[in-house]
Amino acid sequence: MNILFATLVDINSMDERGIYQDLMRELAVFGHKVFIMSPAEKRQNKQTFFAPEKTGGILKIRVGNIQKTGKIEKGISTLLLEHQYVSAFKKYFSDMKFDLIIYSTPPITLEKLVKYVKKRDGAVSYLLLKDIFPQNAVDLGILRKNSLIYKFFRKKEQRLYNISDQIGCLSNANVKYLLEHSDVQRGKLHVCPNSITPQPLGERNDAADIRKEYGIAYDSKVFVYGGNLGKPQSIAFLISCLELCKDKPGSFFLICGEGTDAGIIEEYIKDEEPKNIKLLKMLPKDEYDRLLSACDIGLIFLDYRFTIPNFPSRLLSYMELGIPVLACTDTSTDVGKVVEEGGFGWWCASDSRKAFSKLIDSICGMDSEELKKMGLCGRANLEENYLASQAAKVILDKAMA
Image (tube, rainbow, N blue to C red):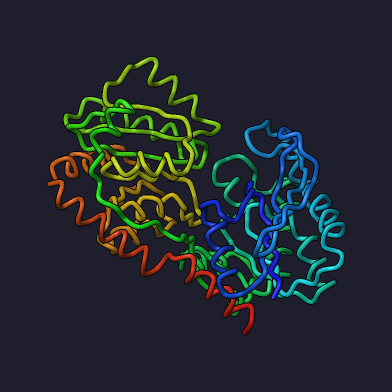
């Protein structure tokens, strides 16, 4: 069958690595044609174009700037997305019939595209629920609960759920949340977690060279955070944790990423000059994985105010490379439960830097072989529960039921 995937992720080839690219490749393995609708932001100076691939193709749609831009420009660009995606769909896919349309949040503003494809082609609609908006913005104090803009987006959110035939949630906590906070029918909901097609796990025999290359202490336990540095990660709390741990012997903290609050960390390091903390810009995927392989423990941070159960995809990168995880999060998410019950990490609440510091002391006192064993438990858990091939089968089974 023909499958359409609409996303805001910048995808240029299905050969790229990532949670969506891996999933689309696995859907193609089942013998289906996969077509992707992906944005080309205005700053790229490209017009809308279609790039054919052997298993389908990618429609790159010229849109306004959405990432790394001001709130006003981002807001306007997001609101214009529906019209731009529908227009591009009508122009480039006028003679093609789709059996299944898959789309992910964010954003919640592709409702009209989904509705159009369903009506025109009779397609089954499948939502990959990666984010619960606008409640996440309320949690972080970005939107007021009873404001007009909140009510506007809340109605769009509900309409998106209503037109979705199936909704794949990141975890059991997400399923429970939707049942308690929306009118979504129970039969639509099921777990379809973030997933990847992992690379083979090799021996780490060049860790010393990699650490030397990046100026990382070789004789310390290296705690690494990789990903977005913004409001959801509670950067102020992260810095307070780093401040408490800056003189701990045998520990080194590597922060690798970009985002709206990255400058706050940069300023802290500039002012305090801690010897065991280093900040790097976001690296290409292959280079980041190489760096990650030379680290000991992966870090996850989520703001304590969240009432929605986030489940960060960066967890999979740590599991793929076979390193244990320290999750410092709110109490709504079940990522800490997954990490602890899986035997490949630790959890503490992200409103207690003392609890974080205590765990750092405990981990630094652990034997390297013990940490390696925990990391391998994470890799085994990944292969058992978070493979893109498994997620593809879940989607197809639900869509064809």
